[in-house]
Amino acid sequence: MEKNLSINSLLDTTKTIAAEIFNEKIYPWEILPYISSFIKKLGTVLPKKKYILYKKDVWIANNAKICSNATIVGPAIIDADSEIRNCAHIRKNVIIGKNCVIGNSTEIKNSILFDEVQAPHFNYIGDSILGFKAHLGAGAILSNVKSDKSAIAIKSKENISTELRKFGSIIADFVEIGCNSVINPGVIVSRYSNVYPLSSVRGVVPKERIFKGQNNIVKKYKKISNKFKIDGQVF
Image (cartoon, helix red, strand yellow):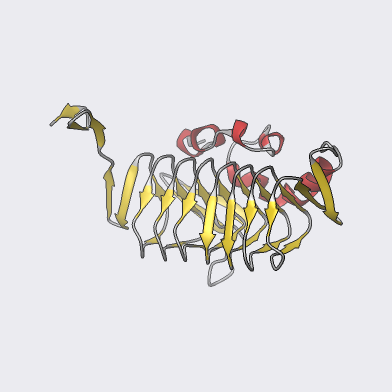
């Protein structure tokens, strides 16, 4: 087991209505095959005063904002205070958390978005998990299938086989993905990290890093009053 890739290392499961699905799992991608059945089970016990059955297997919080030309295909749950904007396409097996923004022409399938996620402009999210306050810049793509259609492995200290042919990314809590970036299948971007615009990301981006290029991943600066701290040294 690689602890830095575990659910607890990447995601605060108190920040999603789907917390239960992560129980008894080690790695977050292990839940992907179970999203559909979990939604159908959870939807039936959601409080009717707070959620409406929008159509078959689609439950939406009664204060969520849904644009009239957005498409939502069940099973799906959209939680409180979220906004689904113009021409968004929610395409089966999707849980969208509280205070999320799903924007113009964004497409999502078989994914869980934690609370306060933003995917506001022309994004694709396939077979992925986005943690608390994760943000995708305009045009960022979470690719979910390899060109040869083979099973996807996590390229870390060890090659961890997921045995999944469709698996996008784990975008951890507080991650920022720059505009027009491609996050390739099986990528993990760890907590508090940033990805530069126009990047093509593979493998694992460690915690609190800036991805400037595949061979140029640097530690983030931490500002202390008017000084900066790098590797424990104050400058």
